[in-house]
Image 1 (spheres, rainbow, N blue to C red):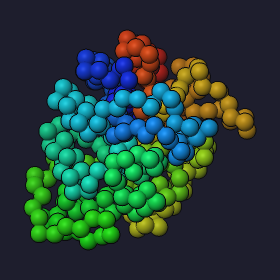
Image 2 (tube, helix red, strand yellow):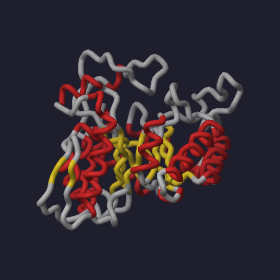
Image 3 (cartoon, rainbow, N blue to C red):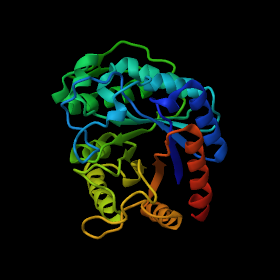
Length: 317
């Protein structure tokens, strides 16, 4: 099982010195991957519903500065040796398909094959409009087309593609990514469309556990959705093993309420022994990758939390 941590792309932790220390010390601690979130601009008037809060409001703390995700990953790839770099997640429709495929391929080559592409269709309509992305209402079909176009460009000697939103032919796309057949595509999201996308087009399913509309905050809830995903994979004519399982836990520990309204214990709530038990349970269910939101007010607090988690939780697994 791979264990990851978040590398903030905004706020006080996202200064040059802080990001460098965070990724290099995280790598030295033995963590397997780090994650990077994606916004290009933050609209001042947001009416879209944010999926990961009970109120549907985008947190006020996120309405400020953001570095561009892929640029940060490319820079930090040169400062690390072993750490995998995960877009968590890249909003697929925000950037043109062919250009994005080239950027991702370049990062994969220059990092020595350490890129994982976490993919999402997006939720912030006003940002779509600001960056000139395809229509927000069509984001699902746009995402599916772009993912298929990525694969064609990355794997075909003479790539060509004809769709509603992407079309190309008679082009040379080289060099190809370092990873073969291509960098893994982890499909983010917890909804039924996200599960269908993961089953048809993904190399992994990568949900967040705190979506109130589709909660995955208990082992039984997560197991139920995994069973649904596996049925969809089989219906798509693929082997279940073709889609790995990941899970993102932005909140964990003693500050998380231990039980749901139905009396079930929440995943990654409680003390170190509880967290270790959950890691083991997820591993036994077939989860390949787990990452956690360690970011605190300062870099030192963040690194201390990562060390404590390694020593008190991971050492018990």
